[in-house]
Length: 132
Image (cartoon, rainbow, N blue to C red):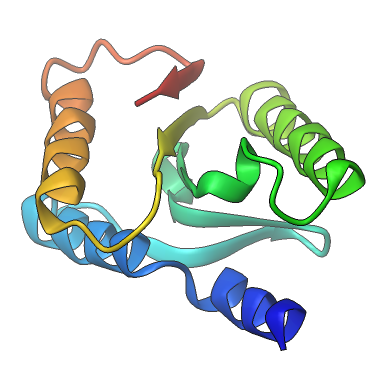
């Protein structure tokens, strides 16, 4: 049951991730935000604006903490590095990784979305990885 729930959650995303998507759509409606955007058959980005080269990964604890075993964590970290490289080198985009530590927290999400909005305010965002 744990693995099945985890698979469903990865497609649906956390409540924090879902709320972030809603806020981004409201705060930056001029952008074509896509939830669970597929960049090829093997890779999916949590939130993206592909035509502007914006890719956001909402990273839960399983990206950093030993939850499902050491091999799972190592695999997750390797996949995150590969995804970063694809976005930066092949797609020439911006990767924003938000470190989320758990339960639904609207205030936390609002703060992170504000940080994302601020990155784009002065049009000086670089094609690199941002850790929020």
